[in-house]
Image (tube, rainbow, N blue to C red; front, side, top):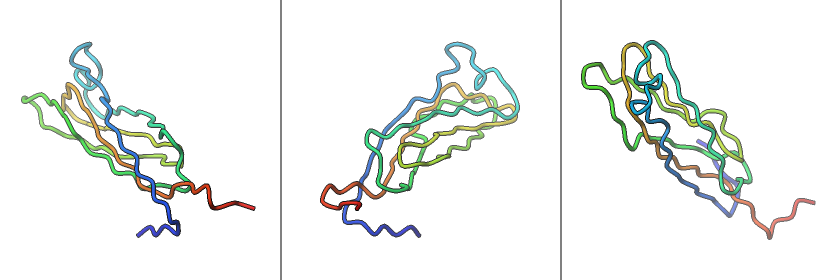
Length: 115
């Protein structure tokens, strides 16, 4: 459990289309084996400490002829952002993916001075 010793808690959220590979023959649609799509998400305002980040698939479009295999995660989390990473493998064909995310962490407080 992460416990924050702050009176101010910040929450930021967003949604990102990670790719639409069926339209242009991208690797998620045409490739085989391990593949990944990595996107840097920058927070609109930095957190005062390391936030917790939750990511989820909010739209996915997989080929019906292959098994749907997916892994989505937040990596390299910092006070200013994180990497949103989607992975697949084997013969899975992914046409497009959209992911939603939410970050929760300590927020700056202008009444608290660092002296």
